[in-house]
Image (spheres, rainbow, N blue to C red):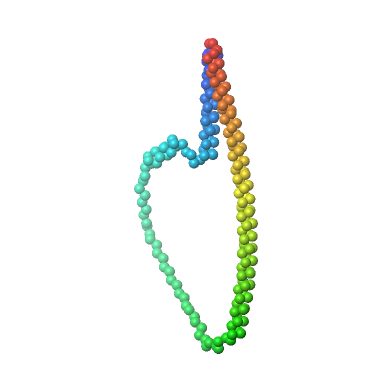
Length: 177
């Protein structure tokens, strides 16, 4: 049966290793989550090595049947031939221009009203989307904060386990067998 000194050293070593593993695992998890664009040099090297070692098989394609397509169309033009009447008088031309102007002004008012209505609708929709995005960002931020709280707790736990392990290892060296 091992003596107390050896037992304390062994238990201390287990606590040290467990604490270090816990802290390193949590730190790497945070780095992967918070900084996904930063891959380790080893991962990039391994990925490059895997790609070089992959066997590239030649790619062949066989066409068993070639299809065809046919298109056709027809059309026609109809012209109405009439006898021109006498040219309109100046009053008729002015009257027709005034009617065209009134019709164009009414169309412009209708178009302006339609555009304002569309702009209000677009503003309403964009405000709703902005509100949804703000809520989503708040939810994601709260989730990130919760994850960081858990990570900090586990890092403190791992650090505490490491410190307990060091104390036990030192105590094991001080206690006589």
